[in-house]
Length: 170
Image 1 (cartoon, rainbow, N blue to C red):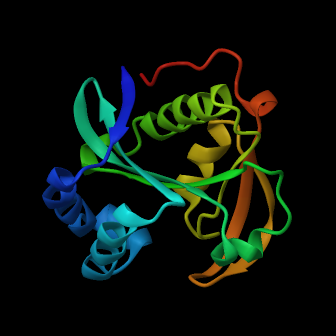
Image 2: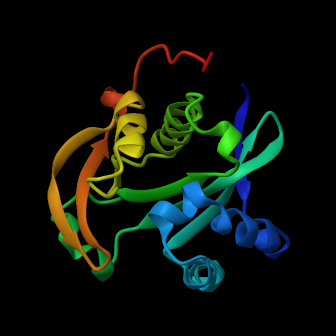
């Protein structure tokens, strides 16, 4: 599986709207209309970078990578340059195939090559599938935190945490 990323553009908004409707995305991202408005609005947010995940050249999901701001105060002190990420994989046929850890390792490796010292995320403590994917990619559980969206599990990854020889999904 070849994984890549390209910047999200306005042309991607119809796909984003469709993906947010998918039950496995809606389960953790919430109301599709509300999330669509937020993602569309974030296109003009300087602290936010938005990407379309590519799997074998095909658009296969969304990933956002952001600089920490006042909204992220609950994350506690982080090294300068730390970035946060959130993502979803589009298409229920891609779920449970090992794509999440591969996407995460690949993206974190890109960030580390650019000098980012640490990548963090905050999945719901009830989202066992996401937590497992993050752990397989090298993320470590830190602590439970309170965010504007509710309780979350703060997880982090640093360059030394990445698996040395990532395996492809079977």
